[in-house]
Image 1 (tube, rainbow, N blue to C red):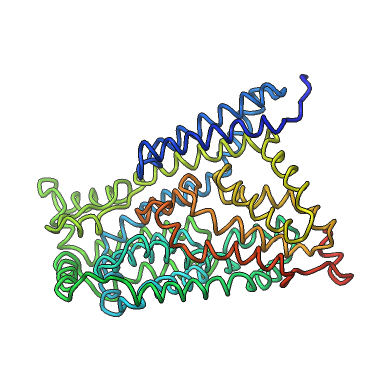
Image 2 (cartoon, helix red, strand yellow; image 1 turned 90 degrees about the vertical axis):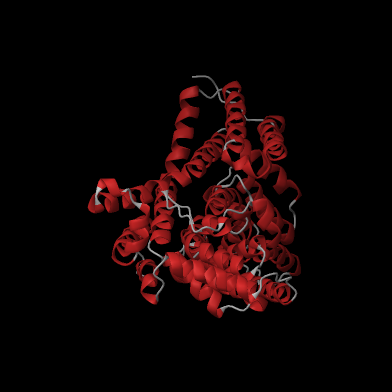
Length: 486
């Protein structure tokens, strides 16, 4: 067997440089469409570059290929969820669930506190169900519809949705990342959540205050007749009533009962289809081909909604865009991005190229403040380079775990930092799996909403400030020594 050589810093920089250059070119040349193919090609070329370096250092192609396949395998659970979320959006549009949320949102939400309310609502829902993805795909989509009716900024609304969804996800014991971070660091789950409160809650409060201020000063352009027009279109095309919210309530109940995401979302999509058949007969009748017959027409439309989504012609182009979408096919571009991103991340980790950056960071991270700052920077960098939230938690967690122990720091410091730097920055990167997903459901580019995702921006900064000031940085004591050395 050929001897494996340790990569050099130049080796590590080459694929990163290729990726950054190509991603920058993709954004310059294709703009908002960069995630619809150009970014995937950039990731593939960066993967090939990293693979060539791996071959140069003694790895066989079979080893590298197995690493890429394993990387893609990790994403299969997320891909299944992605596809079913597409189906859920389609059936919930057809069933009137999303239109009903928009309708009642227009009735009760005042423009002056809309942004803050959107953030808070998403936070509560995400904390209840433990999923930022499901929250954004359901409540988030509806809130964007309400923003349209109120004449408010879609991009700011998306930032509020992201802020709330990731706040709730981060603190929920049902969340995968909330369980993953302490597992990697060797901390207790509820100790981890309790320790996160110190950085997470103040960050969220500051974000709410900013959103409240923005709401008071928002240039609301809509008038009463505009809202009345939207309400009228909703009532003319859908059967609107509180009964239409049953699919959402069922999904929330299943999530609270800790049913895994894929079957829960699948059940939610199926109930949406059933509700469409039960309560949206006039709408379905207007959509089907009468030559097929009623029964076959109904069946064909429901089937089509699962894979191709729902489209409606209301006579208003803006409302058509708002009330159309979904389907598994709408998630295929995101699936492609997820797969290419994880291929690149797997090659970078397998060949030791990611580790080279961490070694250089530890040489200059002498104080506790600089160590925590380095961990956050590594999480953000891994989110950008490996393009996946889970890798952004697991890889830095494994690499810094021993260093935290050596410095007498409890494992909850590391687990909290992994979330402060890894979990909440993932949706801000367009080619990250989370950023790609959020763009696919909210239809807003992460480069645009990132400026307004205040919670996601403030939390890492506040964590660094705490680290340098020594606020809630816990040391290992005899009481915790056994737990933190497991």
